[in-house]
Image (cartoon, rainbow, N blue to C red; front, side, top):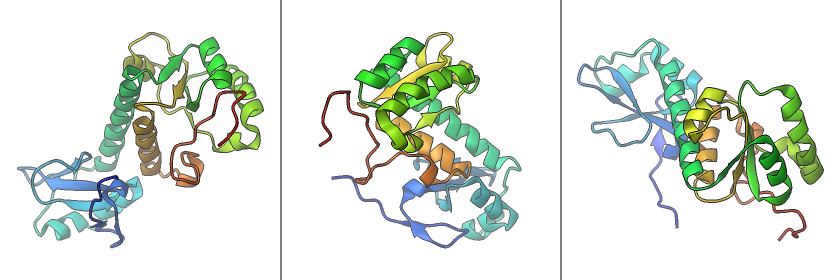
Length: 223
């Protein structure tokens, strides 16, 4: 069973929710507000709903000082800094999935995986040509039909970022296969998108059971 964590209250909305939907902040030695994405830094923490707009509102309304009960120094770039950290975390998640053998790269290998593998997402470099995206979308559409609209297609990372995460050169297209590391990467992608203001209904991450969607290999029957 998953470990139950107590709910926390957002200092902006005053709504309580699980820690997964929030960002924890602590005060550094100089009273500067520091994001604690791993929820591990020492000291008293305050929580903000994990959206850039909520972080900006907390800073604008001086809610950090009120919550910490002392003058808190908020960097002007706090929301941008968090987005960068979440993006770095996303790239690291892809590296972990790759080490676990859950990433397939190369156009033709990805094209084949769409038909033969239980893939959970497609990944395109941000610079990927529209022609390549369309050619991979065609077999995906044949396999999924209208459900293609809710299938995760990840295109936030640049070619350089994909190369760095996967340890190889000129990665343009990749497929994420169900397995160790894939869930963690998708969860990080989900969190990154939500922070940027992209709604959960646009991610296509979960099925009716709350688990990441998986395409079964061609020729198998749905359970």
